[in-house]
Length: 511
Image 1 (tube, rainbow, N blue to C red):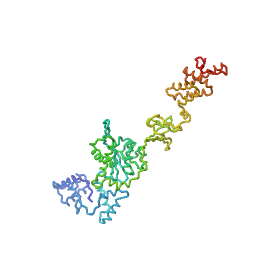
Image 2: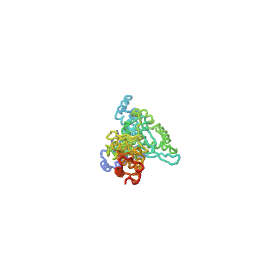
Image 3: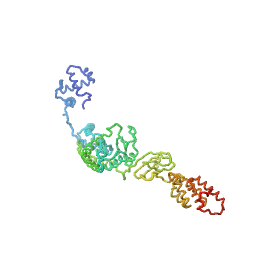
Image 4: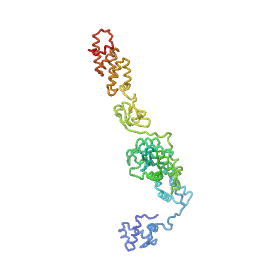
């Protein structure tokens, strides 16, 4: 092995020049700031290969280094032992359970005089370091998928208005095979972000062990080196597929270099090749992106001599976990507080919970069809999601008993009750409800009238109702006063007299 050295070829040239001028090794060491033994060692190397100052003008730094530090007896660039196909071994190493020791034992089984284990590992690692950047990191098959958005967008034209709207490009790259998925979505918001993951898993036909996203707000609420906070909706999607989420460390681009290089490659092969095409819908754009993806995944990787699809099919597909029986249905989670009317709000609509939870914090899960509410992990309410109509969705079982009775009151019910007494009473109820800004505000007055009229004769109730409407006494206090006056006037007549309904409407009846 070459001796360790900290010197550049410029330093070595200066060392040879100073030695030729008669400067001692000790003085050269002081000038260059190195150990005296290092100076002596390098001067001995130069003498051994016949190098003297001045050096030939055409002697490059590479040639100088080769002369000084190549082992004697071995031609530079050649090796003395049979070598395996390093590209094949680099692919094999990605398979689950395969280690360098296993590969070396198989190599020595075919070539007993081959390299020892340490030299074998050194050469294999050296080959891996010479691969393209997208293949430099070591990733086990089925271990990670790297996801991110391309910084550049794809324009889509509205066929009717000619307006141009730009769509985002979602890119995902599997770690071991570099098998790539991409699609266009309108936004980077949570529904599009999660929807892209669902379609990505279908494209791969399985699920890796980990997702490595950038610290996008749709996926990570709070970026942290030690304790990143995953968005709950994103976490529930990951739980459905049985995959972990490992966000890249903030300001550590090498954590996601796989997808960064995949993004650049996708931009070249997708945006670069589609730049002259005009798309009129997201579906058209994704159809063209699908064709570009085939080109990417079937492109021959120069150093490995195989395509991404071949590596994926031979190494990674079998290592992916199976897809669940059903696709994940996007659900948005929110932490909300129950209002004093025992309702929670979501997108300007209100949904009831049991009244005992007033002012408590609950978890709300919203899908396209349902609203579910949980308290301490237990589902306490479920509603059909509202997009129009009444803003409140109330389950009667959630209401206090008094409110439940109140919820059963309606204007039609009060009118039907009043009509069962007579037309004058029905007119009174209609007038009471019409006199309020909202009919519901007259319900309690109508209940008071019902209570006042409960034990009196129908004719008397009709007479009082007519008089109340006539003088505008549309509250319980006025009607109670009219009833009292009616009772006093009645006592002044014969007890058995039948009061004529028409006479009760006269203005002087109660006086």
